[in-house]
Image 1 (cartoon, rainbow, N blue to C red):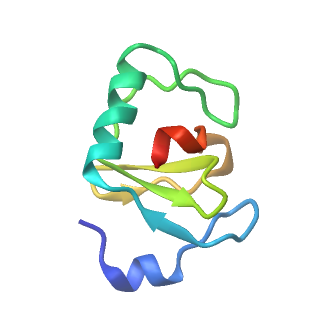
Image 2: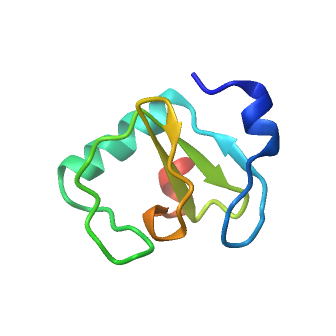
Image 3: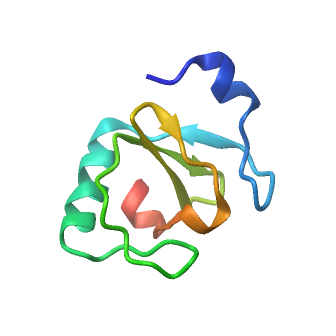
Length: 87
């Protein structure tokens, strides 16, 4: 789990929007889509690695993955999602 202190200071590296932690059921849903090869990164690459969690941008279009309890806050690693994926 990510410390609340860390969450409080993180923001989207691209737009500086606030981020929030994804609910576990949403992480499971995204992992199913990753397994099917349905998700891409902002850099245009297929997402192939399962995520442990995610940080959702306020506009609900990008998820920054969490792997091994480390948030990957690189713009090109952001996972493109639809609002229906995360609601």
